[in-house]
Length: 192
Figure (cartoon, rainbow, N blue to C red):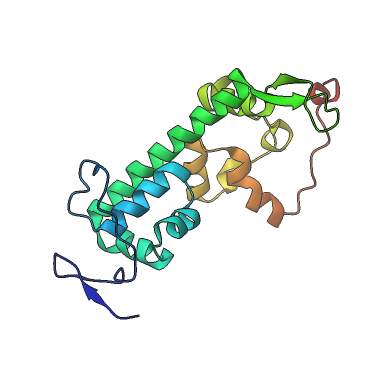
């Protein structure tokens, strides 16, 4: 693909991209190309790089080149990622708490009414995000850890455990290499 020169004299591969000059420019994006602004706008709305590239008519490789070569673009992309996450969180809230109306009672192609459905699964994910200390997944590792001689572990693993990293993720490779059998269910989990 032929290279085109941008305003700042750097080579880029956006000559083939549809440009957008309408609409407001986000703060800090004034010096971006139209293609970069279009991509960031699309990404804010959808949160998926492949789809944003398609809608903005920007090659994925262009986005990754901008990420590598342009610190201002990289910062703007991180901000766009936060905006996309905020949009998704709002949708999770809507589906979990406000609910979604769905037609029911179909007769001859006509809905007889509506029912509001809520997502318990999305609600639980939201609770885990907001209150991880209360709703996080719990794994009983007491059986393995009770007999673990920490002095035999490499310093790197001890440091990760001391930093509070999940013992399962830290020790899983060690336990697999030692072929430690899986733990039987704990008494607490049997009653649940």
